[in-house]
Length: 246
Image 1 (cartoon, helix red, strand yellow):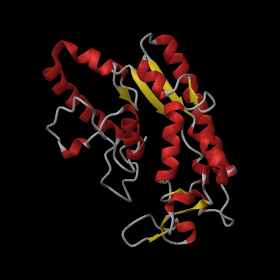
Image 2: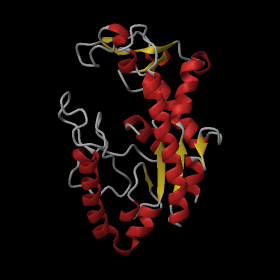
Image 3: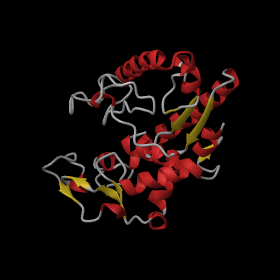
């Protein structure tokens, strides 16, 4: 989940947007915090050559553990109850988390950066195949974890299928541009990333992609609406609204 998703999930719950951890590194964050880092990944080397300022997952988990220790001092014996009622986008069951929002990999073979490599600007079928394969294994693992961990609860969002709908029937969702990024340079505005020197589209609301990989605000809001109270077609075994109510 990116910062758009986290902020709007908080909005749906009725909370203020979670503050960035590094903005208040000594904070306790009883009402939530964001450890997200744009462009970061599971591996420490993700985007290292291009950005070099991202915070990889391992470091984000370290920040969470620091906050958890502060919460323990603040809440005492109520810590586990507090954590068990909170929502987490990554799996840290061993540190007290019990409710998880899990999102599958999107149709990344259709992202502007990937399309850019094709002379015709078409999606990369091989990339999409492996994204789908990953999602299949992920949902299988979640089912197994549910059987193994009695307190484990989750809501899975099928981002891949929703993106497929966006690409195949864009007008249904208010999009008329699904190939080109709104912000960037070159073919499909994907030769160079979104920077202060990049060109911008005149209306980002009708674009599926903001930059070479990330969706626009318009697309992200649709994701959150589906995740919050969507049908079982894209969000299962329960919606986030149902997950919170447990």
